[in-house]
Every structure is written in structure tokens, then in C-alpha cells.
Length: 224
Image 1 (cartoon, rainbow, N blue to C red):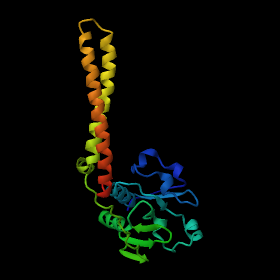
Image 2: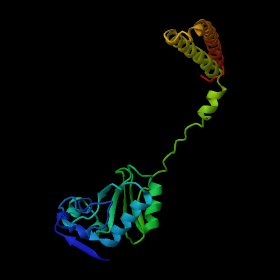
Image 3: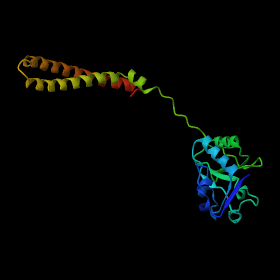
């Protein structure tokens, strides 16, 4: 397995870093800043990121021997070889994450539900810890499409009629004022417009009454 080692992550040449979803600082030792890059492991980590389509929060990647001892890591921890990663499960379903990790070639799995992360490495194939419990998936109650509910509501239909009539009455009043100021050839139409305004106002009042009745009826049918 090709491995690259650097004193700190700042020493990694830009041209040597080919994993766009991660940075050298994310993979470096949290205690010393040193970094060891196992290219096969990083290729699989990038493939896992691409497969899942969402960020991987790396809690721990490479560990220097001294830092591994300081955190109580296993004496032969894969972290010291740069072939292991601890990934936070905060934004992942653990079952889906594990399945995807296996699909891209990770073989070792450590479960840490209390700490909220999963350990993955290149192997050998093994697992330890308490598996994550299945997360319940909430399902929202199925509701009829809004337009169907609205089309069945008599409140909406009668309210629409009342609103149209009210707007129409107001529009006639404005039009009447405009026509009154125009040429005398149009002035004979003004009295008829006044009558039309009162007709529309009457329709609006009837529509409002029907709206109130329909709203009560809809409320009784649970369609408010």
C-alpha cells in the first residue's frame, strides 16, 4: 500500500493531495499534527463520501504513536498506519453508513454509539463494540392534495364569488369616475354603470352570507 509521511499536514504538497472532500488537516494526527497518508485508504474514504453524497465528519484518522498511547488506543491500532478512520454518525444512518463502507472495501468496524462515531479500517475483517440500534423513521400522515381539499370546500367557492363581486363593485365605481371625466359621448353610459355597481354589491352580500354558512358546514365536516 503506497504511504506518504510528512512532519505536519502543512508540509503536504498540494499536487500530492487528490481527495477533494477532505483536507490534510482533517486526516492529520490531532495531537502532533503529523500526517501519514495511505493512498488506498484515502481512495476508499473518498469513494465512501461520493457514494453517500453527504459530508463525512472525521473524528480521528492518522495517530502518531505517542498520541495513540495518550488517548488509550490499541497498541497495534490501524490509526497509526493511516488505514483507519473514526466517522461521526450525527448526519448518517449507521446501518446505511456501514453498508456503504463495506461496499467500497472497508473491512474492520468498531461501533461506539455512546460516543457517536463508527470506526472503519482496511482490515482484516472483524467488528467490535455494541451495534447501533435501528433508528425509527417517522412517517407523516398522508394528507389529500391541497387542491382537492380546496376544490371540495364550499367555503372557498362561495368566498370566491363574494370576493369577485366585491372587487367588481369597487372596479365599477372607479370606472364610473373615470368615464365621467371623459368625452360627452361616453357620459350616457354612466347611469347604467351605477346600477351595475349596486347589483354587484348585492351579489357580494349574498356571497358573504353563503360563505358564513359554508364555513360552518365545512367546520362540521372537518374541512376547515
